[in-house]
Length: 218
Image (cartoon, rainbow, N blue to C red; front, side, top):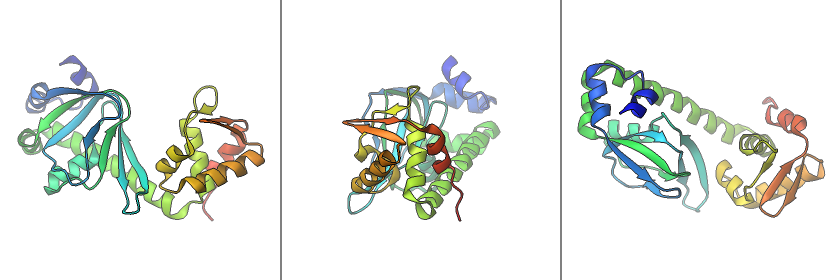
C-alpha cells in the first residue's frame, strides 16, 4: 500500500505497518455523509485523498464548521469517540470526493497497545487538532464578527482574490446567522474592501482585509 506508506511514514514499526496494510480502502463522492450525530463509532479513519468537513448543529438549526480532515490526517472526533466508547456528537460530510483507510476498533486498540509509532501518530494528531478546536472556541467567544469574517475571506479566496461562496455558506463556517454575514459584507463593500455580486465576492483591498483579520484582542 504505497500511498499509505507515503502519507503515514511515521507509522513504521511492524505492527503499525501491518494495521495500515490490512486496513480497508473506501471511496465516497462529494457531499456524502461520513458519520452523523448519534451514530455509533466503530472504525478509525485515515484520509488518503480529499477533504472531510466536521460540523455541529444547534437545536435552533444553526451550524458551525469545527474543522476539516485533510489528506494524511485522521478525524479527532472519531478518535475521541473510540477512546470513550461514545456515539458521535457531531457530523462529518465529504467536501470533495475522498478515499480513506478504515481501521476497525479491534485493530485500533491493538495499535494503541502494541505499536509505539501507531500510538504516537494517534495522539500527536489528536493533540494538534484539539489545539485547533480550542482556538476556534476562543475565536467564536471573543473575536468580533468583522475579524472572523475577514479571516474566512482570506482562507477561501482563490488566486484571483474572489470567492464563490454564498452568505449562508460563510455563516455556516462562522456559526452565525446569514443576516449577520450579509450586514458585515455590506459594510466591507461600503469601505471599498470588496465587491458583492450574485454568488461571488471579489476582494479589492487585501492589505486592509489582512489588517482586520489580524486585529489583536483588546
